[in-house]
Image 1: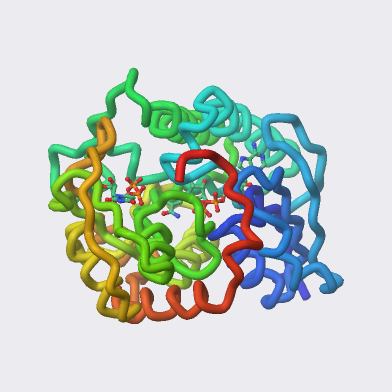
Image 2 (image 1 turned 180 degrees about the horizontal axis):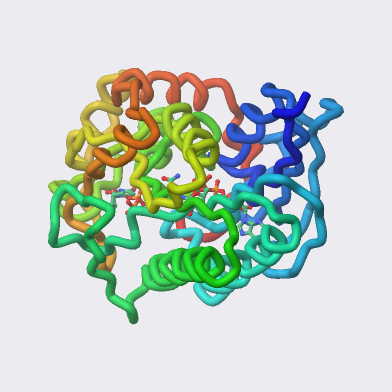
Length: 324
Ligand code: NAD
Ligand code: UDP
């Protein structure tokens, strides 16, 4: 069929990438998943290995890769603060050299290429909620800069390849997303709170817990990414993808306790440097251009995520960094 495509997903074994691969394989596309397993494990895609339209390649995206594809989803990059700060120089290399490598491939193959950018390009925002037109407030020399500036540079590369070489690019800015297959030791707030609640350990609230985030369920997010890849060619973005429902971290802790029935205590820990105080996406553009908005409320998504945490054996997961 003419609509079937050869699709590369970098970071395809990760939390979001593995669900994206699942969707694309189910739609019948020929999917190549490339991953170096820095923050994921093969078990995330083991169920796809038997499919004749799925291929798994262990490869580090900072090195060039020679494939012939029609579309590229560039998701390879450590995403949680603990993971991306573990080896900050490698994080920058992954964002910048990874972008150059997929853009080079897209240019050679005339492929469409989508970049998984982030709300972190807005830094600790002075504008709330954040529209795509806001240019951000990032501390260029702080501990989050390896990720924030790497993703900002990647956006620049995408737009320069588009203007200079006519590459068909797409940029999505993803806001905090959660769901099944988050690494239990990634240190992100949803996975950490659920793991702590289920183990009866103290729930670690950083700072006062009054900082806010907006949490999008994985399935909604992946639907948005695919719609952006399929959008008309005159729309490169960037476009925000996230759930506008905004919660304090303390509210998230209380919801997690209620949904797990845990008796864990809340304990305060120091707030990490440059931790953004407020974050909420303005998704007007995604609604208008992609007809997309999230459908899964926080409690429903947390319930599904908690079910998944119940279904796995935490001991099967290797903590990729000491930062958990
Ligand atoms: P994840 O850590 O589960 O997935 C990232 C994947 O990339 C992992 O499988 C990892 O092993 C792989 N990877 C890392 N460096 C690599 C390299 N050099 N070469 C090849 N593979 C490499 O995280 P995720 O939440 O699934 O994030 C996926 C993408 O979405 C990332 O680019 C991230 O920056 C972006 N994003 C995610 C969120 C979120 O809330 N989940 C928010 C904003 C942006
Ligand atoms: N956070 C927390 N306790 C934890 C982990 C995170 O209070 O054990 C806070 C963190 O300080 C931040 C928010 O939760 O304010 C979201 O953190 P996460 O690492 O999930 O993502 P990001 O800061 O990149 O949005």
